[in-house]
Image 1 (tube, helix red, strand yellow):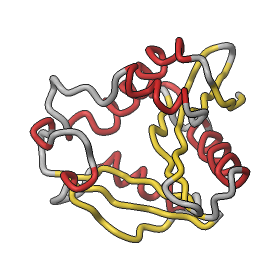
Image 2 (cartoon, one colour):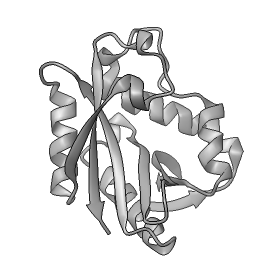
Image 3 (cartoon, one colour):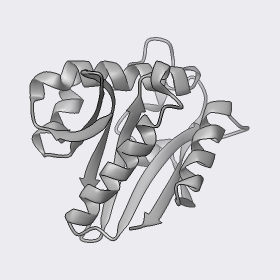
Length: 170
């Protein structure tokens, strides 16, 4: 497996499919059935900005992630996705490592990410992801209301949600 930045916007539909498959498996019950996690148009933005990383294995796309500068020292990690049949194979770990390396190269000293979780109770997949990010050196430092962070409508949610915000010094 290898991870590379991509600039070909023609990959946006396939990357949107990867993201939607991963998020449907991990958080599908947090959204209404008719809600789509992302669109090719939304994926084109980080591709055009040189901020989309793609994981390849055996000639096929198996995952992706984006990096977005927040301020002079902070980069946000987003869209971290691996095809569900690739979970546990190191795709996510390699994407995060490549994203951190790219952020460092661009002068960032901190990586930040947001994890969508139910506002009340726990969620097995989200608990697993939170623990995984902690093992990778991230710490949760705040929680934010869904409405305060997302450009999406809360009406797309099946249950009330919030974002746990994690960060890691690079």
